[in-house]
Length: 218
Ligand code: C5P
Image (tube, rainbow, N blue to C red):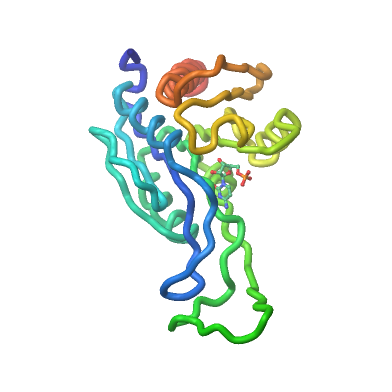
């Protein structure tokens, strides 16, 4: 149960992976089930928020009361986020955005030729860093999935992207699974949460977020 602690609040979230095309039938992507992002979108809606979920390709039903904008590449995701932001008080970036995309997208299916194929990649925009740096930035929540040194990487990301709140987890603890082990990082320090289902964790994150908003925004 989540009290309507986000009533009157508009929340924009990203979730899932991005898919960066190589040619019409191939692409590169990150591994992300979208489960945590969708659970958070649902928890925000249950807490009374107006929710826009900008989602990369996943196999999950859209939660009741959530408006979903499906996207593929990071640049589509960025455009959809910027379009959804007006009026939003909160941006939660759960998506596993590909850091790089193929420099060129072949217009036709590429044919097998040499033993070695070299693919030139170019950096994608960092959507969260860009939103957090906007002059009228919403309250930004970041995610960090790491395979080691969670505390150091998470705190580093939080300060580099200037985020009031970051949710960290070790990939081996929750990737693709129904439950997860997460730690919240904010100005007050680190707050480890007990292992729980992604929907329970989403409600805890919303509780924490709502408490922070109550002191920051109002
Ligand atoms: O990739 P990284 O570990 O830096 O991701 C940390 C946070 O930044 C996540 O919340 C992710 O959704 C966001 N991000 C983004 N755009 C990128 C890379 C990451 O919004 N290109």
